[in-house]
Amino acid sequence: MEIVTIVVAAEEDELSSIGESNAPLDEWSGIEATGLDTLKFAALHCLLTGDSMQMALDLYEPAYVSEGETVVLRLADELLEQLALLDGEALENVASELAATEEFERDHWDTEAVLDQLTELSELAQLAESQAQVLFVWIYIVQT
Image 1 (tube, rainbow, N blue to C red):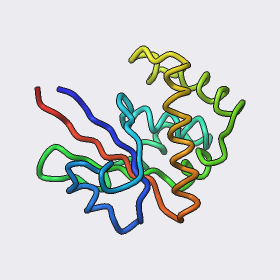
Image 2: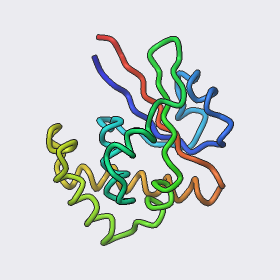
Image 3: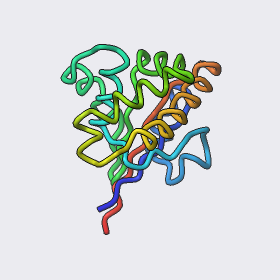
Image 4: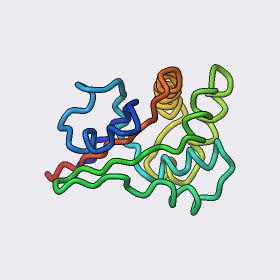
């Protein structure tokens, strides 16, 4: 089994369209976020907002589930705002702290890989914020 994760910036009311899409990057601005899952987004949320892990996990219940193998999460507004504020040194500090969390250590993410993904997420959050959009996480489970 392989999990494909894509984060897109879209209008709030496009949730079901994203869930039904077979190729969200063809239709919305976004990034591939291979290896990021609900637990990792929750860990990032906790780190940037100070919320507890349980509170973060409650926020990231699926917003959409297709009949196929697709799940869509909506990133919390607080996380989007914090991601959009990150730059330079702040990105490096957050990446270092995030790489040291259980969720990232378990999957052997090094600080550089976390920094690369975090930088892309931050840039997408800035784009979404500038266009009054939200961030959705499209997760597709490929049965192998």
